[in-house]
Image 1 (cartoon, rainbow, N blue to C red):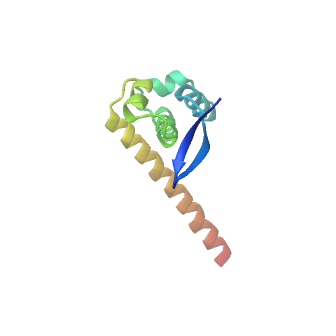
Image 2: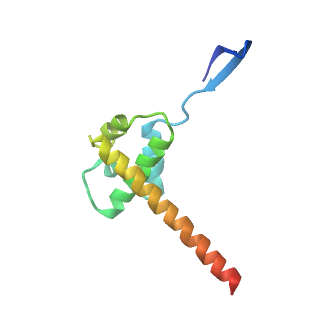
Length: 114
């Protein structure tokens, strides 16, 4: 479903369409759980095992990056976590992702140089 409204932009009346949020937190959690072969309940659990924590941080980052949910909403959905825990998870996932990209780039450059 698409919401629409009229906007006045530099004296010009325009009809704008705003797409509805594409995924809910549940849909994001189900998608991430499927990627890592886990249950959504594992993402919501208090487990600190890496096999649960890293996918949970991935879900936190996906939910936060969607721009549709606050840190408190994400924390409530993922087992009652504090907003600062969600922010830490987002930053940790982003750092891990960036390090993997940097490693791939360095590996590719080294192969091309050889």
